[in-house]
Structures are given as structure tokens and as C-alpha cells.
Length: 78
Image 1 (cartoon, rainbow, N blue to C red):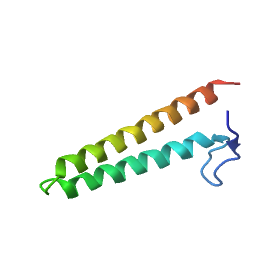
Image 2: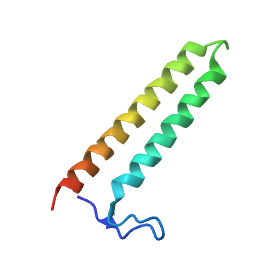
Image 3: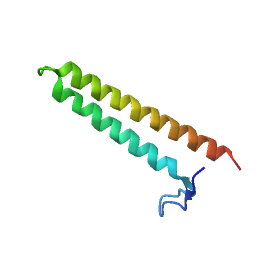
Image 4: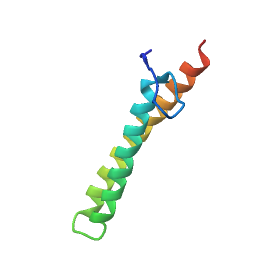
């Protein structure tokens, strides 16, 4: 289990688990990967590029899901 952040000043959030920030980063990365997929649609060899981008986004979203599950567990632990 990782340490919790002391909080976000002015936002009323205290003791935020570090995984919360990890989850946000993984989700942002997955969205960036998926936004690139459109650049390859219709180009030569696009199916390989799109398949790779989709696989990368899938892996990032699995990491984000794990982060969210870890956060939920931490919040349930007294």
C-alpha cells in the first residue's frame, strides 16, 4: 500500500491515495493514444497502427482500473 497525499489545498480533499493520481495519468494517456488512432485510419498499413494503438489503450485502461480498485480498497481500510 502506498502513502496517501496530505491533501489538495482549497479543494476539500484530504488523504488522497497516490493511486488516484496514477489512475488519472493512465486515463489521460489512454485518451491520448485513442485520439491518435484517427490519424492512421485510411492510410497504408493503418490496420497495424490502429491495432497497436488500441492494444496500448487497453493496457493503460487496465492499469487505471487496477488503480481505482486499489483506491477503493484503501478507502475501505480504517
